[in-house]
Length: 263
Image 1 (cartoon, helix red, strand yellow):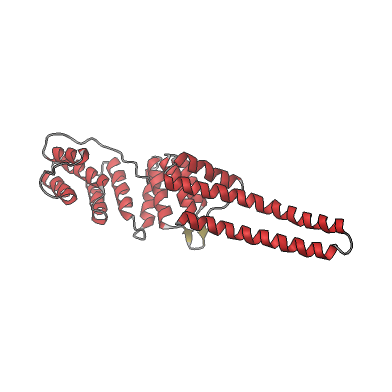
Image 2 (cartoon, rainbow, N blue to C red):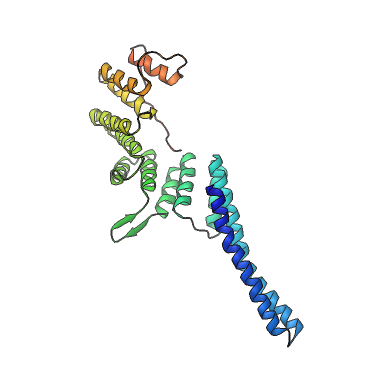
């Protein structure tokens, strides 16, 4: 639906512009035809040429933008990125939603620095501070985390506050960064906050269970796992849940694992 709306919103101004050129050309033609038929034709042609000079590049940009969004929605990240780049090279501007789509595309390609640049380009500084959508701030924190810029990432997630519907991701990444500083208890607390906001968020379950077992808190790990899958063995459970059950039962250990949460 968004793709259709985008295409229509871009084509309607082009249709009006084409109509205006035709009307203006006809008006000029009618004014000049009494003096010279050749001059009237030339005038009409000049108006059409000037209109084409502005309209054709606009339509070209529209084609790249719509194709970029279509590729984004299909998960074709390399193609989407190429078309977003071409759109910008042709002088196109992105609204907040499309800017986020491009940044998400780059995140899926694991081009962290480029994604950060795109996100920052969509933010505006005002007298009250930075004007940005909560999701843009969230993705900026994700970029900086995967770049290894943990201090900057922490400040970005903290600036997000509770204004986003996806604060469970901020809590998760804050937990990861606390863990990297060997702050185990704050890390576990952050993973628990993430699960309070999104009980089905597997990465937070995995990290919480792993750290609780590392601390010797088997009962706590069992409680986290039970909150995720329910008590008792589950027939047909996938390998990841089975691995957690085995770890809680003392039959295996869980390695530190990095989840790439970009889509």
